[in-house]
Image (cartoon, rainbow, N blue to C red; front, side):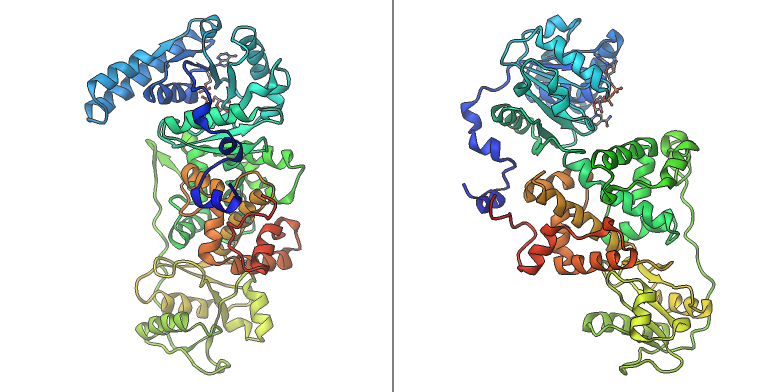
Length: 529
Ligand code: NAI
């Protein structure tokens, strides 16, 4: 099967494809070690999928609590008619406690979800190897440790793989199947077919920091912190703009508050170090400080937002006082749709959009940069700085509009622009100068990191996009985001960011550049695939 066919069929993994899963034995009995948030969910998932599961924890009460928790969830599903009484009874019967590791000896798949500590996981796998048969598979639910390192102490490292679920495991329909340096292809293929049997998408990845999802997710979080740290906009503004302008379900700061900034900060630090301080993954000193101050989010009652009884206290969006509109506007763009849209809005506001090539002496000048900041664009066009500001034309214009000021702008004229551009009631955000506003640079960072992941063979393009959509709930996967907004525009934005900051953080991935140069879709595989 060639790569193009692979992309079309959406298959997730070359190893799994080479080895038809029907020729491989299905797992008959699963042992789950660690009965915390993840272990109990994994146990429930496979018991529901028809496989007998034994659940072990070094704390006996954790096992009882986990089984009681699972019973309650399953009974609730039955009371809502989601499963019938026979299925409920059979599933509960398949979910049994193990009182010691010895009781797991007959399992052919052992999945560990214990504490995230390399020594503890290596010690556990050594204990398991002393008990289980030679062909039993050992899988780790680790989210940040190297699977290869966990396997390194095992007698048979070829049977060890990562099996990384997302919380809550029964509901998040994706699992990363991680191939350590010495993992057998057959182990990967068997885990993939088990995941599919349970209704989960198996996203196959080599052992690489953050695997696929936590790696791809770094762009959204670190770029948002960078924008905040540079004083371009407030956390609430950034969240509103990314929700309304780019279709994210949650803004990055709402997400930090939900996950806990301490957890996110640890992931950011860990990836940065594991990639040997590549500036693409640079964490923010702002986040480290906020963690030190205990501003962790929902769980501490205050993060980027404040919480009462678990509910976010919503602050009213500021409403500027009305001003008199007495200036015409001029727009640098020749895009007919944008001119029509802006023209209509200004007419509604009772002012005109000039049509001459150059602005009149009184006009408020709107520039529409891609990847440049307002200052650079105004300077390049030779416009009067006190009368010029930028309008974001990338992304959704009908839900929220974004204007970008620069240090020389007259505040009176900023107020006029803000009022005129919101004449139809659509909220207008005004942010400080930034190359690529907010939406452009966040989307470009996501696409660029996705291209790097594809370039390094960490995931096939299809696997990458599907994994990110399922695990992170983005409106598009990273490469599909690039196609949606146009790969050439994404490249222009990155080049603008690189020119503005001169930092290799923004260097375009060769995967992106080559496909733009050759006019190929971002999903096109490398010839050697
Ligand atoms: P947790 O703290 O809720 O549960 C861990 C359980 O393991 C506890 O019940 C503890 O008593 C038990 N345990 C610890 N050491 C043990 C040992 N040596 N032998 C047997 N049992 C032991 O932790 P959680 O959140 O379930 O995480 C478990 C693993 O899953 C970690 O590796 C974590 O990184 C990973 N993970 C966590 C996710 C999450 O959202 N919480 C998501 C994906 C992976």
